[in-house]
Image 1 (cartoon, rainbow, N blue to C red):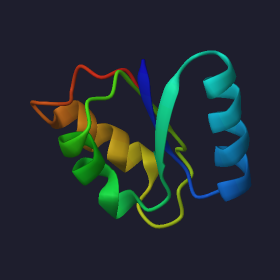
Image 2: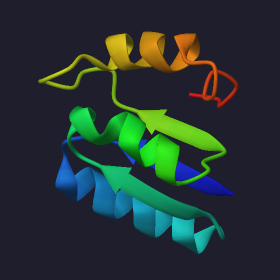
Image 3: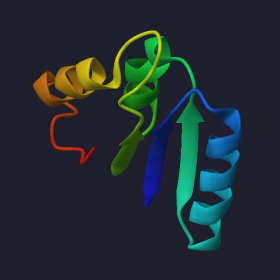
Image 4: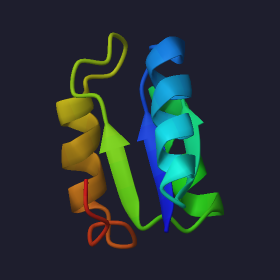
Length: 77
């Protein structure tokens, strides 16, 4: 399973990626919301872990956008 992590906290992301790897998951991360849809368009993810408290673009707004997007609306967030 390929998981996309969207968070600005680099230390938390390192910990989470290490934990996911130990359980056999593959993960990628982005720390800047403006690259969110570029990542989704380039790699097939089965799950998105999204911080709803992002400082630049709110995570709730990104959630709304992904659920309104015809190609990505079925990805669990």
